[in-house]
Image 1 (cartoon, rainbow, N blue to C red):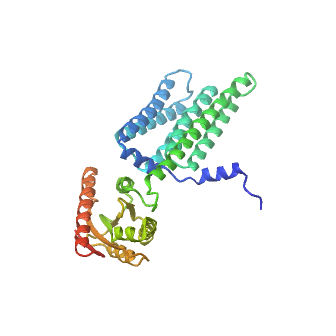
Image 2: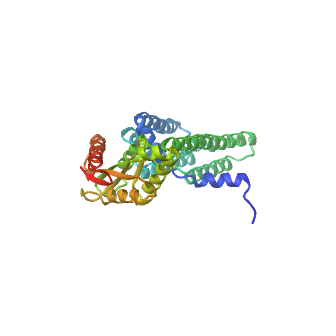
Image 3: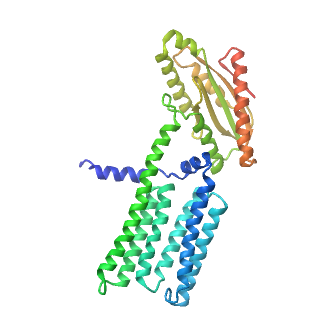
Length: 361
């Protein structure tokens, strides 16, 4: 078996990078940058449509009624896509549809040009969709965008021919390919590094669980993307009993081992979709979505699992449940704060009652 050379390994890693739309959206939303990002993308999209519109007023741009009709339809669709971004932040599926539609519209406008050189230079516009994909989506869509760009630009170069001015055609072709590699791949390198740094900044370095801010950002991300069927949000506050005593008698190294073990417990006992975070020295938060507003079984599982660890600690667990599917974004944010407060109060009730038990608000 031949070992992978570094370039092959790098390509494989690039290809396997996950789609970044959700975490980028969450990152922008948490920092209040959604509106300005929407405005920027809408402006760029509408400018593309404006360029196509101005070009259509040239008497030599497109010959034939059919070609003009196709170009005008494509231009109108691009205007519509720009209007969508001006009005709201799309879902992931809508974002992918945006890529495919804009990509097709650019291809149509370039292909129907009477002057093949104009069509060739117009392929530079694919760098816009390539840059967008680099910021929000995976390598597969980048490869698709580049394949369409390469095919269409080579097609336009062949239409023009290399007899009259081969250097001009080659230079234009190289410019198109340069813009459609340099811009998207340069942006994706930045996004990839940003994603790694953000991933590290979002996690508690000791337990590997989400930190406080990332915990609430994750809930907000799920609520905004609508990827939950159950309509109730469950919030658990977990505080370790006798943890200070463990530190004092056995040392902080033993305390750290206990925290790591609790982190593993919270990661392993919850099904897919359960969110766990460390929000204080020995305090943890757990969130899940449920179909009923009853006291969650997950709380008792957490309590029992911590008690079963090979450390002289137990857990006081407070829980609170609220319905989220009928609320506005502002209402959901208020409910999350309220659930956190009530779960915290319930946890202190459990602790005052002796610990190693749960209380439900």
